[in-house]
Image 1 (cartoon, one colour):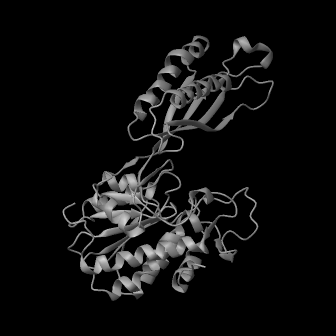
Image 2 (cartoon, helix red, strand yellow):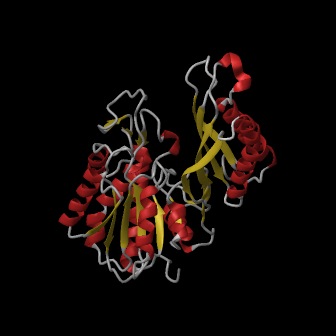
Image 3 (cartoon, helix red, strand yellow):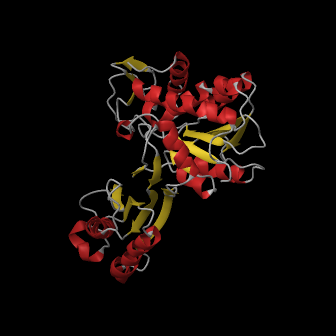
Length: 395
């Protein structure tokens, strides 16, 4: 059975057993990584959030005056609330050729293997450097990466390329969908439910807009545009959370819901959003305001990340294919921080161990064979870094 090194397994255990749910601080993990790298003679730059309770880490192994390759991963994981686990999610368990624990697939294993290779990177006289970029709060909107990008953009020598190690079963991903999400707050006018003609029902107004969002989703499903390499092969709209009302015999005053658009790179997400806003302003609000002028709705964007659309002939694509043995690249519908690196003019691919199907679920796991494939990937990269033959010159 393909099995990763003891060094990688020990590093994965270290990171998995440091809980870093997005709502909590990640500083214990970041400080541990900083101190570990310092013990190897590698200095790190920390980029904190406004609260000072979370931080990104950026570090370089190799020459500082040469554009290098970023190995990037997020340090946060999703919550375990309400999930039924067969094991302690924050204790690494090896069983049946798999490692079980929160973050094994998404995506601490990649971060851990990259760190486990630090001594090997240091043992070589690298002509092309390796950069580590480990971020916070990817799971709630790529918040950490958004703070890190301005730092990278101002570097005297910016990285030549980036590999984001999200779980792709070590397949090279050149494109993924972008996402924007919003909260909509409806304000109605409450009264006794026997006198509905005197009230403005916020829940029903919200439901009308949700139904309109669903109608747009059906249109995109049926009319496209389409790209069969994505699943689903069209832009999707989705409402995920609704809160409203206090009692059945009260016409509800308030209702809020969360919705999102995950869009193909060629689609116009802003036009779709405006279509929803226009429906609310012209079809729903006039009826509400006719009874009570201060009724209506407001839109608040809560998250966004850009899609990724790296050219199939980009040198980083060619390098990724060479390191994996793939003869083609693929596309995925889930989002990553890769689009932010790409927007910072750092050509980027997504390629990492594990399967996204395991992410965010109870009993999350990663196969040991996937970890070995990730090590094989870095083993093939190492001599290219040592010799400066990555094919990235001139990007």
